[in-house]
Image (cartoon, rainbow, N blue to C red; front, side):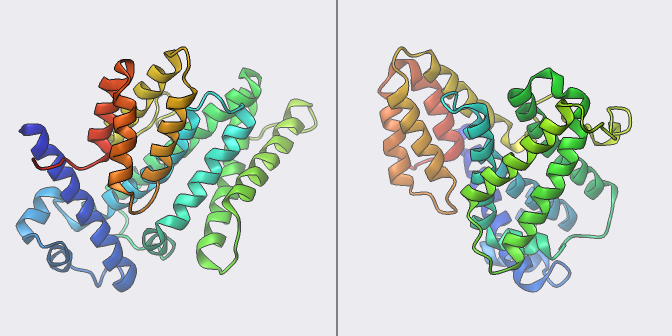
Length: 302
């Protein structure tokens, strides 16, 4: 019963975040009130404040929620051991750019710079978001080039962040029809050119651990935001179980299909429950498939 209440609260919290994004994207941060947000979701203002103590807390939660949705796409692709590191890195960029296009209202709000005035909370949020990006980039660079890339990682991550951000802005602010797949491959190709230049001794790094210490948040862990840690752990546990099977390919395909469906702004719940049912038919996968299903899908009323 307690678990059902927790899941229902998660659904309500998500509904509030989505409604707030739509309103802020349309009206702007300063012209959107907490009462308007509460009315749009059909909850009382008091109930809204029980989830988000202030408007600032709400805007921070919006940024963290949608950035995590984008990053979770890359996280799940990263669990696919069948893809070579280079292809996996490109695919991770691809699915993030697909997510950026999917969450148009959020990106519209983000590109307008809609937020509260600068504060310690907002600065902390920005710090965590950068750390999340750098943590992911570092793991992929080591997968591609081994530990010998370590002296050059900060220069590579900083330049990649700039490339990533500029292409994101282009995708959102213009009518250009950039292909996420082609863009993912293009960015990894540019990273490879830069990395090869460093490794061959043609370039020397400008940045090091000491200089970049202020940006190193989350580099020693997966970096998930708190509200998504259980969900990422569930994905990881399920993929680990599948890789232990003697013939994992079928179940990898089923799980990949769940991942693809979950990326959509409005996933087909019937399709996803059917796919989870296929996983739960295998005893070795049943426990962690059930945990992941609980994290992704709303509780059903019996």
